Image (cartoon, rainbow, N blue to C red; front, side, top):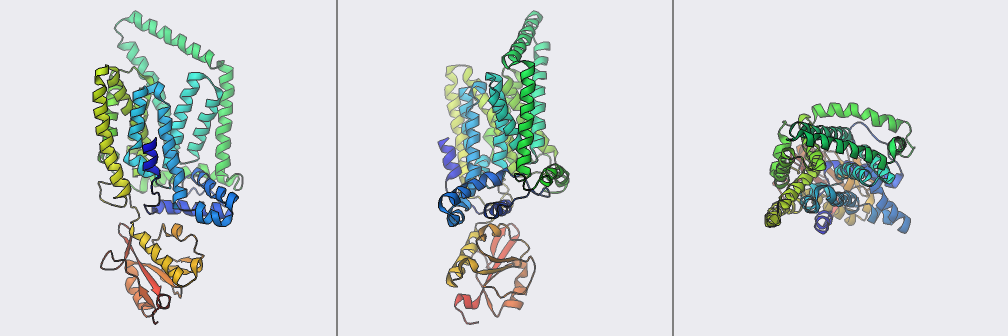
Length: 517
């Protein structure tokens, strides 16, 4: 947990906001400052990220006032803390599964997840993914806990986790379907193996009778059919109620928000066919490039489970992990952050594989230690390299760096702050943006009240103009006598790389620089 916390929380402002983070940040700013958020089904995910992330700035406002909220509660670090904490929470949930995959298995799975390049990278991102996988695993853990101890609280927790899962991202439908199929297939496979591969048929009949009795006993232990029916009703009420609350913006957008929550599947079905389309083998290649220890050990674990299915939960986890991999691979739409959904179950069966080796005999402990040291070393190196050095490197070997904002954009923001300080206008400094591509600039310019996002060439007398590199000649013609280009120093054009294929130019009014017009 300590290693996972350091990797996820250290220097959270180092990496510039991604385009998607900027959009999410824009929603959050409106929610925090204006109390406004309406779910948009067109091309955006669910509301949980914004409401959970708004808690920190709201606490600052409650304790120290409006200025503290904006200056300290609403910045890159505080908004990224929330996904990072959910990422840590996922590691904690893995540790709770030690009764299912063994102490060694749970520790190894948690360690692999703690240093996973993708799990760390996405935990440091202000997007929905870490919340999504936390709630997915939360459903599984709470369901298992209820089965083990029969406490109704776990039914409510499982239902709450499922509700928050669906209120986080539309792909919850895929995860829920895969979990249900994995559960059913686990029971069928175990029945098949016991029925047709049991050497002694009397032993099989005895085993079947024992299991039937065990299931009857479990039903009694859980309170009987009537109690289960009542708990199911409560679970449905919790599930529906939580989703209505979030999607209706706590009844500020009711019933439209609830209707839009259903309508969104129409949009995302279309998106899955048109946007970010990659070959069917893409996820496998991405896993091999960045998550080699987990996919390697996970494959071994799955083979051991299928060969000798002695652990029902391990079999379920294998079907869950590889089922998600298959489901997402069949869909044309593919993005690296979706990988996290099957990295978690793959980590579980990786841990189980090492638990099996440990159970073979105490002499195998050296093999386990050597394997884990190698796995952690490989993943740890890739994690540090990706998250703290090559976080904006668009080379194909860094698969999680997907159209990411280049670090030079922060230099552009620094130059704007210098102009604001020099002119004494501070947050009132006027900024004209004529480039069609500018996200995540709205996040970094959130405190400036005079920003115009025109997306096309327009007249301006503001101190700052931001244009795309392709607009350079036109800017020079229209504004060259009054504005001075501020060179980035990173290339001959003096542009500031925004993301691959998109470069921005910064112009400042000459008098704002103390130059003669």
